[in-house]
Length: 383
Image (cartoon, rainbow, N blue to C red):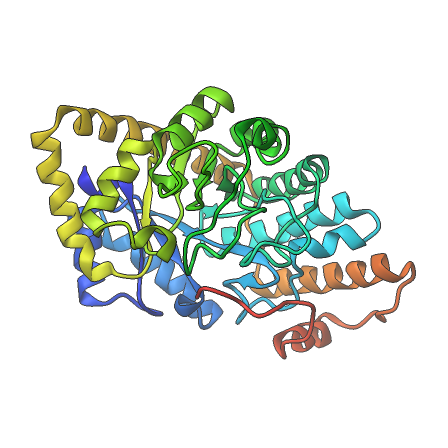
């Protein structure tokens, strides 16, 4: 039971002996994939299959596949735009729904159940560090319109969404991967702006990621949202009315990692209200963390009850994933996906210019073009 509140990252393109033992013995809820885990189409299919076959209670697979600068599949699917790009296109809602469908089809092909996307943060000028080109709009209505379309397209292709970064990091002063980020806004302002997309979309997604920024007008100025009961439970559950699974952002990001050991952080995050807690890099520390969870279960009744609640929510999210998968049709081949990506890229160019500027080419030529790295994708971050 201890591992069932954890999501873990693995180190490379195949499982190490330590990773294999952890999957067999501790049954983590999720494995989170990054660019470092993706090399070729065949390798990724084999890796996901191996991860799931290793455990008698297979983990769900999570990934950040936003397009643009956060593009874990960049080595095998080229040409995916950033979220921001859709604000400059005609027929944006139709295109972004198609975008979600394509990403969903790609992830479903690899048997990846959860995309840690879309981003619901509002864009500001200048954009918050770490959010450049990742936001769908500057106002809640645009974000709801476009991120909602992305989610529907993705869900229709069999992949669940996890909305991020609650309660909103668009006005942050720094990138939480590297240090503390401050959002100095009262709850009233957040409710009208940053929380508005969650009011509309959170229970449709059934998964929300809690960020690590601090909100000094709401909570202790040194307490990240992911460790705050007021934010992760009272605001998320009581104000927003969210009933699904709360997923922490990576607890190894410096904005939160600097506040305690992994053992301390897993307990604080759980008791704050996170149902699945992510540790995406230091897998060698996970056996000790899992043993700590086991010990605390026997020592602390409130901790034990909170684990049971978290597992119930996480299992409901897993059931949602399986339901989406069961309704979707897997693409017949990876070449068929590449062909659709090519048609999508042509539609983007047409939307930007008002006319068709990319000539019709054969599927074979299109696949070759995309695999050479052409298109509108950007540099990936946080691999």
